[in-house]
Length: 316
Ligand code: TXA
Ligand code: MG
Image (cartoon, rainbow, N blue to C red; front, side, top):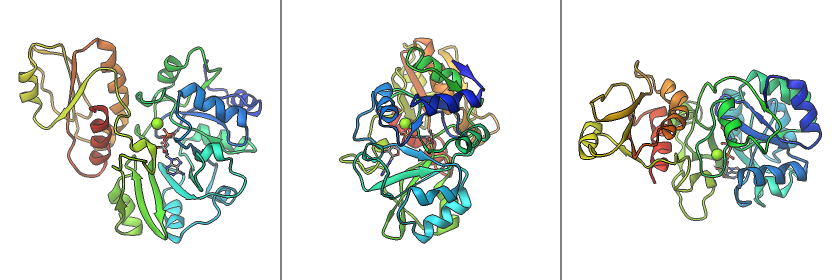
């Protein structure tokens, strides 16, 4: 099931089948955006509700013409600066984009992923790929081919192996209020990096009811084990000394005899490395039959803000 054979992936996708694909953020569960059979199968395989729209993956910015009917000036600047890369733009949709992709909305989410295997694949295909993260609804996103294979072993013919994902958390999603960018989902490109290109942006990533982007639902990205997020890890360990504990820390060890399992995300204190390793660490901690995972809050800057967003959702 796990294979590096791009030709085989092309053949399957041309037959309306699904293939899990590597991207620099997380693995995606991909199908032809114009195949109703493939797209319905994406929703069914993930057990994803139909109100949650999909991201369209294209090989280059030129292909945007077929997807979006209008591209604001600041969207052009962002695309030019960050594509291929971990930025998803939500734009007015072009005629011909199926309603099932956009959950009936008149906007469509689109990005050019930055992964050599998937870029090569997209160039071989005559259609873009719809690809949500390749995990069942409400569970942790996959950052390795093995994570996907474990989730969908009986339901999927192929996981195209591109190695571990370099960025490790999902793309940053930006929509537009008229001409002005609005961040719908924090992600692998920090708000600071976005603002360096287009100036101050509005954040709208916490709306709970009728969410603009359903990735903003409160409970998301969650491990099966209960998780708490805190700044004072030593104190939490002390409070829960009677439990079988896992600790997920940023850069330092809290090792005491009480900790059954500890993962340090980045000993050198790099937020990029911490993001890269985050989901794999949650997958791993989930395997140890722990009573509780104590996660340390990251510094509230750059990618730390995106990581804290994911950990907060995982703790709900
Ligand atoms: O990094 C990523 O973005 C990964 C890789 C595979 O590309 N994909 C991903 O897809 O995270 P997914 O389906 O797990 O998350 C897509 C998010 C959802 O929260 C959805 O609500 C939002 O994109 N979205 C899609 N179309 C939208 C639209 N028209 N308006 C607002 N939000 C939209
Ligand atoms: Mg997802």
